[in-house]
Length: 123
Image (tube, rainbow, N blue to C red; front, side):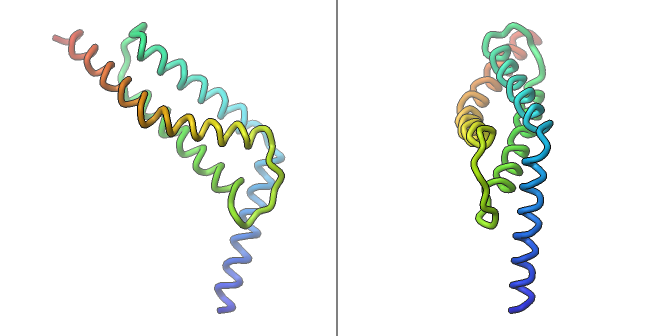
């Protein structure tokens, strides 16, 4: 039982330290916003058909954003760390919800649409 208490304490301490580090550095916030806006631009380009590109780009960008959001949510909103909610936290949670919505609807539509255009172009 003592080992479990020790591991739980170690987990709490580690998560608290990581959470504190994410509060003191802000470059990741800017990188998040840039990547997010790039993905929005690619979705718009995909839907309008302005450019034809490999749908894998959308998939890769979406995967990067999903992992970033998942890691940040685990670090910043875990039950072992008491922290004040910042504006970035609110934005992160909102964008996480939007990404879940977009990835379940718009991504499938965009991929299908790009696949049809590619098929037509290559025929």
